Amino acid sequence: MRTAPIVGVFDSGIGGLSVLRACLRTCPGAHFLYYGDNRHAPYGSRPPEEIARFTGNALRLFARRRADVAVIACNTATAVCIDEMRRKFSFPIVGVEPAVGEAAKHHRDILVLATPRTAESERLKTLLERFPEAHFTVLPLPRLAAAIEDHFCRKGRLTLPEHFPPLPCDCAVLGCTHYALIGREIAEYLHVPVYDGTLGTARRVKELLQIGTADHHPTPAEVFDKNIFSSNFSKNSVTFLGNSKHMNENVMRANICFQCF
Ligand code: DGL
Image (tube, rainbow, N blue to C red):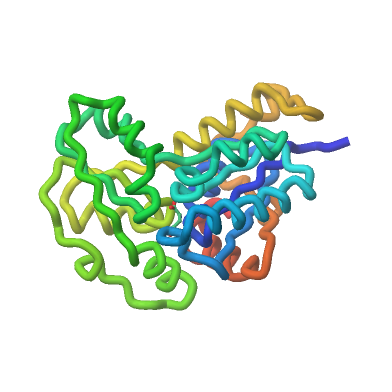
């Protein structure tokens, strides 16, 4: 008999750690699997068929581990293949999408930073059309996710002006989970507030866990009994999977979630 629901979190590399961080705070009763496909990162300019194949491999790994919920913590993979994955797998799959709705509540002139595949996707186009009162500039960034990966994993140099000019805007939406890892730096560089979708994704995961999954129905006490700002999370809250598991765990510990991990 299981004691905790299992949530698989997947990204091309370390970007999904920003979503994992939000999930750890929001769903303290769950056990998380993290799989980063760092060997194939970045996904952002790869052909859609390839991205779908890699995503399918990741979700099969979660299925073998009997995950109750899977999170595609990658805007690019969500944009390219989440519908296909939902047809293929029986567990609920949560995707990530740029937090343009939240940004449009407060701002008019909105810069959306994304990978080339996300930027050109029908999914993003349809999403933006839902907010006709806002003016969106979508900026595809072909190299930024790789530079962030390199910076956190191998101490590579990361300078934002190499990737995009400080464009005038009221706010920026971070349409790639890698960008959320340097949200503060992007905000300082552009001098505007930034929005990322990590918390919204984590709230959706929490909702699904509260509804209960096939063989586990967490009681409200299980979900709410810990203060989300406490440091009760332990190493045992997450199992890192795949060839890059040690690197992802080290990045998580050293840079992202040391206060709660
Ligand atoms: N972190 C991913 C995203 O949200 C993928 C970035 C990449 O691999 O290019 O889009």
